[in-house]
Length: 171
Image (cartoon, rainbow, N blue to C red):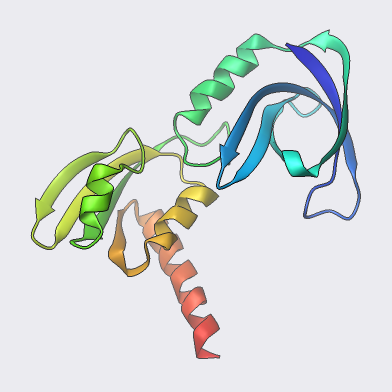
C-alpha cells in the first residue's frame, strides 16, 4: 500500500524514465513478469516489465485502493496485460477447425468462452474480451486453424496482419 519511485528503461526509448507509481499487481504473461500500477501524474494505469526496472525506492504516500480495485476489475476482460480504461469488451466469435476444436473445448481461451455450435468440421465459440495486442497474437498463433467471424473490425485487422505476414514470404 506504498508509493514507489521507479527508474525504468523501456524498449522503445533511448533514455531511462523516472516516475512515481502506485504498485498494485505483479503479473506473469508469456514468461515475462510485469508490475501493474497507477501513475498519479497521468491518471493512467501502466505495465512495467520487471526486467526493465533499473531501481526503485519507497516514497511517502499511500496508494489509492479504489484504483487497485478498478485495475483488478479491468484484468477480468483481457488476455495478457495490455488494456485501456476506455476500451469495453467485445463479443468475439471464432471458428476453429476440427483439429483445433478439442484443444479449445478442453482448455478455454477465457472464462467467458461459450460454445455456440459444434459440427464435424469444427466449433464456433464466443468470448467477451477487450481486443488487445495479446489477444491478436493468440488468434494469429492458431494460424489456419481459426477464423475470426466477428466483430468485423477484428476480422479486417487480423486479415490485414495475415496479408502482411504472407508478403514477408513472397519477397
